[in-house]
Structure formats: structure tokens, C-alpha cells
Amino acid sequence: MNKKKKTFRPKARVPKGLQDERATDVVQQRQMLDAIRHVFELYGFDALQTSALEYADALGKFLPDADRPNEGVFSFQDDDEQWLSLRYDLTAPLARFVAQNYDALPKPFRRYQEGPVWRNEKPGPGRFRQFTQFDADTVGAAGMTADAEMCCLMSDIMENLGIARDDYEVRVNNRKILDGVLETIGLNLSDAEGQGQRLTVLRAIDKLDRLGIEGVTLLLGKGRKDESGDFTKGAELSDAQIAGVVAFLEVKGASRSAICDALAPVVGDSQTGLEGVAELREIDELLTAAGYGDDRVVFDPGIVRGLEYYTGPVWEIELTFETTNEEGQQVRFGSVGSGGRYDGLVERFKGVKVPATGCSIGVSRLFAALRALGRLDDAEGFGPVVVLVMDREDIKSYQAMVQELRAAGIRSELYLGESGMRAQVKYADKRRAPLVVIQGEDEKTAGEVTLKDMVLGSEMSKTIEDNKAWREDQPAQISVARADLVQGVQSILSRYRLGADK
View: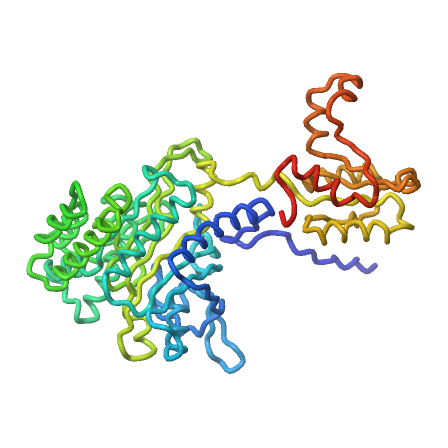
């Protein structure tokens, strides 16, 4: 007897490190992105979209947690055996675009871009393999004015999103200062070994907020084993060298200018380090002149950024308020944006230095923060107006109704299922419809339609105790002439500040 062949059924699941987004999240995130876009455009940046795929050699070896592109990005070979990779950020593709179109672009070139990026890294809580970034960059401006403007831009974005001044800080440092410290403690940054140690130091310091000074100290030395047992090899600095780096990280000051004063002795005679301190002083003067004080933008030696391509000032937007996580613990959201100066990326393509600076907003983390702060509108409030189908033989009449509503700019849909009226109303309720349009045989004979206010009906059902009170209160269901369909719907929508194109 032949056994019945078992039908293979794939398991419905989201790949590890990825997530789905439902309508509420999509709508609320769109509102947040619109607020960010408004500030970008206010500063004169123009929109750009680059390809999600790039040739792997165009991306370069700049990932924060990998030394080779194929260890940190998703890659494959195309039919001519060239390696393609999903972009891991929006900056490397921008450098390729500028190099490819350099002669035709205005200089400086100012652009903003929003889109998904991908990292082939170990996923974890709040750490995804696909996430959205929203960037603004200025290419072709060498002076610190462009960097100071980025700090102002990030501060304005936070405040345009309703984040109070006490709840965020733009934290700024300069890579040249760290290089000066490394030169002072004896690292030779001109050879491959020194550059390798420098990169490991950068990545160790970039974890300061998460691991604290003790964890970073381990990564500056032999290395560190995490909670899962995975071991990360360290920079293998000597105890004296580690002490020099830690002294740099612990520099404090009551103001931006005071921090600059404290940083100067740490870099010693290093010309690179002194140049970095001078650049921070210039940024401080520009910010002060623009009215951005220490309550909005601060200097912090612990900000170095893990990406290798930064060459000067670097910054992060830090959220300073605390919230309660799923385990009931008090936590801080931390960084929701970052950026810096990268004068070498376009040079990789053109062979000449092209100065560039920019910022990147971490959309997912910022979105979670705004939700925790209650700064997002209730996107679950309303869905489309639903036109119910009472007589399937007369579907054309219902189709005409929904088209009239759409032509008037009212978001609406025709019920396309097979259920009866009660199930259709339940469907409309699940769709968060503010109202439904009903035309049965009686309404059609009278030349009318019935409009059922779903919101008012739901509220009245909670408080009204008898039929007499129901009749005396504002009716949740009204009849209007068929010719007045649009006006009747608009009248009900106006109760909830809805209308055309909403």
C-alpha cells in the first residue's frame, strides 16, 4: 500500500532580525518622517534616492562590526560574476553618486535621503538586520560651518518632533583628537598594524554607552567575552596606553569651551590632535553665534563613531530621558542619530579629496522614543469610509457611490466580501471606519442613503441605558438624499476633523 505523499507547507515566519510593520506603525512613522523632511528642506537640502544595491567594491571596508564587506553585508554575484551588496548605509552610495555625476552637480551638493539599509550582523534586542535611515549631507564644503550646521539641524529636528530641550543632547567630538591621543601614547598610525589597532580602538570606544568604561577597557586590552560567551578580540594596548585613552574619555568640562581647554593637554604636541581641538573651538563659536547653547549641543570625548570613514568632527543625538522597558526596568533610549565629516569617501573614486559631512537619523529607535513620549498622533483613530453592499445585483450603484466619495477626496472603499450586513458592519469596525454608507431596498426606493456614524454609535452604546435616551440624543444614524451623499459624509467626518485627502 502506497503511503500518501506529505505536502510540504513552509512555516509562516519573519526571518531573524527582520520585522513586519502594520498600518498604525506605517502611518505614524510617515508623520515622523514628514516632520524630519520639513527641517531638511527648510535648510535647503534636496531629495535623492540611490539604488538599494551597489557593487561591493564601491561600498568599501567601512562597516562598524566587520573588517571585510562580505562579513557585514548581504552580497551575491550577478551573471557577470561581479559582487553586488545591499547597501549598509546611505553615505557610501552617496559618495558613489557624487563621483559618478561630479561635473554636473552644484558644489556644494546638498541632499537628503530616506530608505532601508541592511546589515549582515548578529541580531538582538532592538538590533535589526534591516532598518531605515534618514540622512542629510553636504558634499564640497571644507569649513567647519557645514559641520556646525549639521549640529543645528539635528537639534531643530528633535524640537520639531516635540522632544523637549531637557530630553536630548547633540554630542560632538573630533576624530583628529583621538588620533592625536593615539599618537601621543605611541601608536604608529602610518603602518598597517597601527591602523588596525586604531580601528579596534574606535570600535571599542563606540561601545562606551552600552558597555561602560570597564567593558571598553577590556576591549582596549586583550578583549572581552560577552554574556553569550562570544569573545571579541581587543586592541592589545599596554596598560599605560589604555590609561592614556581612558584619560581622554574621562575629560569633562562645564561648557564646550572648557572641554576644549581640557582636551588640549591630552593630545600633547600632536599636530593632528591640536587641529582637532581647534576645529571644535570653531564649531563652538559658530554654534554660539547661531544661538545654540550648551543646553542643546555639548562636546563629549566619548563620541567617536564606529564607522572607519569619518575624518574629523563626529556627533550623535542622544535622548537623555528614561522610560520603562518590557521587564519594568528604567532604561534610556540613547543615540537616535549620528554623523560626521568624511573627506575621503569620494576620493576613493576620483583620486582627489572632496570634503563632505552629514547626519543620519535612526528612524526605528527615534520612532520608539516618540511613542514612549506620547508624541505620535493616534493613527489608529480612523480608516476609510466603507460603502456596504446590500444588493449584489446592484453592485454598479455602490461602485458609483464610492467613486463619488473618492472624487471628493474622501478616503473610501467598497466592501468586496460576500457577507451579510451585520458582518459587513463588523468588518467596517475592524477597519476603524468613521462611518458606513448603507442603501438597501427601502433607501433606494426613497432616493436616499443611510449614514451610520461608527464612532458616535460606539460612544453612545457605552453610556445610553434605554431607547428613549437613544432617540433624544444626537442620532448615530441619519438618512440623506442620494444626491447629497458627499455632503452628508463630509458633515459627519467634520465632527472628527476629517475630510478630503485624510
